[in-house]
Length: 206
Image 1 (spheres, one colour):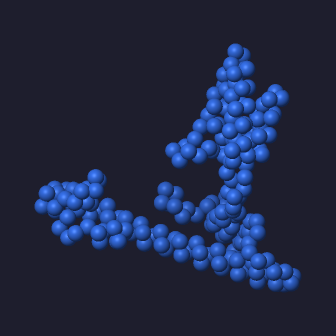
Image 2 (image 1 turned 90 degrees about the vertical axis):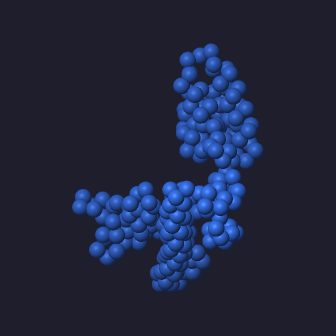
Image 3 (image 1 turned 135 degrees about the horizontal axis):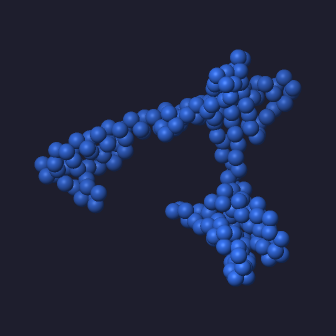
């Protein structure tokens, strides 16, 4: 952000169209609004850097502890595999490292979509309007053009015996490709009822 700011000459502000506007032509309320936003963004950058450092350090510390624990059994882990849960001695706090596969769909999803469309056309004269709506929804993409894994998983759970539908669902399964894994850090505190509440590390959850 600071590099971007340095490209703007002194005495000017850049508007949303990318034009340089002399400060004397900018209203006081617009200047104050801009100052407030940029001040908050500066704090956000600091927080992001702090959280990023916390994440790297914490994963490293948990990895080192897992290696230390495994040495008792003369095992060398070579990295965290699967999920790990750590508890404080009093059981009040829990730290979990979760591993999740990153999945995408390859070109075979297009074959699955064609088979599903053929099923819809055959069923369109029947009474399965709700199913048709749900299936069409499953293949809708988000703003980035990605298909929701959750919606596809829901569609896979439909108990439909139709042979063409079964081939479509097999094509969906075959199209799923694991391209990597992502690690998540979650921290919990036990409440008065004995259940664990996740400690929020995002602004919305605080």
